[in-house]
Length: 85
Image 1 (cartoon, rainbow, N blue to C red):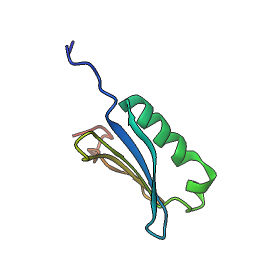
Image 2: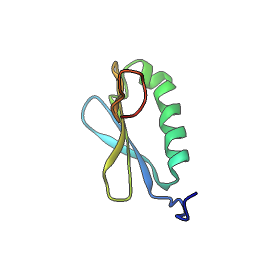
Image 3: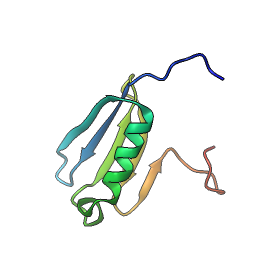
C-alpha cells in the first residue's frame, strides 16, 4: 500500500465544437473527475455532438484523460487487449 494520500488535484474541462471551453470541476479527486467525465460522455449533448472533447488534467496541468466526440477515449492509449500499456 502507498503511504501517499490522494490529493484533490484533478480538473475536468469540456470543449465545444467552436473551440470554446468551460472548466466543469476544479481540484477534485481522481475518482470524482473520472465519474463526472464519464457522466458527461453519456449525456445527450455529448451524443449529438454539442461536446467535442472532454479532458481531465492533473495538478501539473498535464492531460491524463481525453474523450472525443465520435472517437471515444483517445488518451490514455490502450493496448490491443484493451488495457493500459
